[in-house]
Amino acid sequence: MKNVAIAAIEYHLPESVLTNQDLATEFPEWSIDKIQGKTGITGRHISGPEECASDLAFAAAQKLFASGACGPQEVDYLLLCTQSPDYFLPTTACILQDRLGIRTRAGALDFNLGCSGFVYGLGLAQGLIQTDQASKVLLITAETYSKFIHPKDRSVRTLFGDAAAATLLTADDDGAHRTAAYVYGTDGKGAANLMVPCGGLRRPVSATTLEAVSDESGNWRSPENLYMNGAEIFNFTLRAIPECVASLLAHTDKKLEEIDLFVFHQANQYMLEHLRKKLKIPSDKFFVYLESCGNTVSSTIPIALKQAAVEGRLKSGQLVMLVGFGVGYSWGATLVDWPFLGYPAA
Image (cartoon, rainbow, N blue to C red; front, side):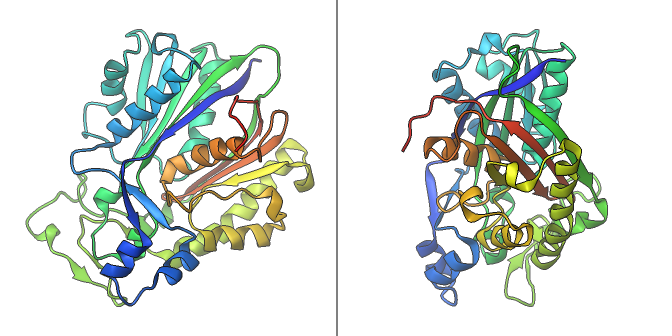
């Protein structure tokens, strides 16, 4: 069976930045230190009014092509993970195929997953390559969650930023740097705890769905805005993710101490630290990168991987555990034998 390598990662952040100073000015009851202390975030990049997920995805892919990793005509399959597509139909991946100049005989599809989407995308790409449906798969994660957020809802506005990441997966004939086993999980009973209630066909938008109301904590939102039950998401994460990690270790016959680096979905500093301590992962093996970009949903793991490589925390031959979790509820984990991507040390 063919091995599959992560050959390159690039990412793109929108130009506009929402800082903690901006938020503290809008919400005087929250200080800059309080926001950073709870989230670990100092700034979030926000897409422009006319800037969509496909625009961020295009920019990330262009960076990858410019790096020399591959050209658009070499891509056999385009996978786009997004929950903020340009249209209900057509598929945003089809629009990107044309815009990027990817050949017309390539496959292209969207899949709707949030914070677990990168891990799921790696699994899909591996399946395509190992079954000879493709030899080079371009996996793009792109979100503009800011467009779902009410400006007076500090509960989610402090957390989420917009971004896209482009990851190239290739067949690895020499057997090195392969992606390994996967474990997945789904619990739709938690769907209502992280949701945009209106805007789909189940509950279309109307004049009344635009009306915003305040919750007991003073956060304003309408049914067309993103709602998150933070306490329930936190409880779900602490319950499901340790089991997920244990399952992956058992499935691969590995021990925790054999893993060189852990890169989890970058939800927020508070949650990540609780997970790290519960799993007893040493801090020097647990990579966190969200301070300057926030929670970018499906792009947090590839952004963190690129940064870990740039900073010298991630080197060729190391064994890396990737864990995604969140909206759905959905979660997944995998082990990756890491290649050297050529990024200079910081």
